[in-house]
Each structure stands twice: as structure tokens, then as C-alpha cells.
Length: 298
Image 1 (tube, rainbow, N blue to C red):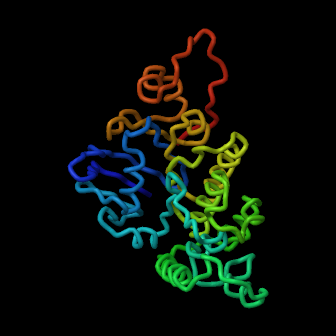
Image 2 (cartoon, rainbow, N blue to C red):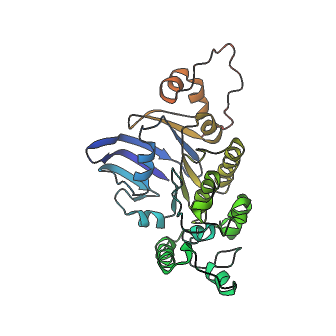
Image 3 (cartoon, rainbow, N blue to C red):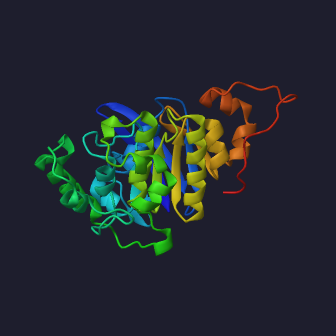
């Protein structure tokens, strides 16, 4: 589905990605692991066109996307859950979802924002209801709504009702602005926003960062569910134990390069790679127990 071929990406004169080659197979979870500053987020940004590669090729479903603008890549149904959430702080939860929904139809399972306002009692406009914000929302909806003709079966489509079922707290907070949410709620919203675009490839950059263990477990369940429904996932993580439990195949990055590629069990058995590149303490094999790998095959 996705092939990254000898990709080189720069920030100014700083050479960040230095010949990255990797693949994401259809219907699999592929993990990218590594310490801070090794180029993982830059790889995500290159994939979605935010920081285009200067050399090499990125091919998605047979089409080269290396230098396409972000809105064109988004239109091919590649969604990003960015590191740091990057939600719109002045928009409500529902409005954040509205600008990312895949079609112009009213949000399934929820009345449209305009309908709710039409029947709501009059009140002073909040910052999220100003003409400027409404214009920005409309423009973003037009931009993100122009999708390529990939279609899922209706039972598999993600809409607002479905993401609210996965993240009930977002339903409770649907009328709250992004800057009124907790860090965990913002992360839920960032994931939900990517899902309502109904991606065929979901790029998740540190989705468990800053989450409580209970929420981390829920993210793991969601990733497995998405895979079962046919979504391909590129999972970028520092949490190696979480990634090897979830992924079908793993790559390890260091200094802008892929330094190790294997199935999760092989990585977890490689003490040298784990210690040198992931900071996982070396364990005495005579007392090691419960290797956290559940996945088999690629």
C-alpha cells in the first residue's frame, strides 16, 4: 500500500531523514520506533506533505505522492493523528470533527452545527461562533471534503456517532472548545478527527503520549479494531512495549535512518537493538519473563 523509497528530508540545511526506505502492507499495523529526535515525526510530515522530501519517492497505492500538497494527500484518504494533538482550540469538539468529516452530508448520529444553532435559544456568540471561525470551518470542510472515490461498506464507515461510541467523553464534551479539554480529551479528539475522514491509511504519531494507562489500553484496542476493519496503520511510538504488542512489523530509527526491521518478537528478543536504540534496559535472560508480544506474522 505505502512504499517509502530512499527518502531524504531537510529542515533548511539540516539533513533529518537520510535515506529512509520502508513499506506498509495493506491491512497491517507497521510501527516506527526510536528515541526523541531521530526523525520519526519528520517522516510522518513527509508522508502527508507537510515537510516534503527533497529526494527519494513516496508511493501510495501505486501513485507517487512525494511532492503532492497536503490537501491532495488527504483527499487520497491518508489521515494523520499528529504529535501534540493540533486541534483547533477555538472550535468546539463537534466543530473540530465537522471540518474533517469525509463528505458534505450532515454528521451521522448528530445534527449539524447549523441546525443545533438554529433551534437553540439565542445567546451571545462565543469565539467559536464568530463569522471568521464559521468561514474557516466552511473552507476547511470544502478542502477536506473533496475525497478520492474510495468507499467503505456503510457498516464500516466512521461518523460522529461511531467515534462518540468509542470515546464517550467526547460526546459529553461536544459543546466545549478545544482549549477547554484536558490533555487526554484532546488526544481523543485528535484521533476521532482522523477517523471521521474515513482513512484507508492512518498515520498515528505518538498517539499514547501523555495518556493514562487505561486510555493507552483503549488506544491499543482501537488500533486492533481498525486493522480488523481493513484500515492500514503506521504507528509511530516511543513506547516500545505498547508498539510490539500492537504491530505486525516494526522498524527502528536512529539518526534519520532505519537501523533495524523485523517482526515484533524478533525485535524484543534482540537485547542489543533494544538497549542501544530504544533505551530498554538489558534483562538477564535467565530471569526474563512475559515477553510482551502478542502478534504473529506480518
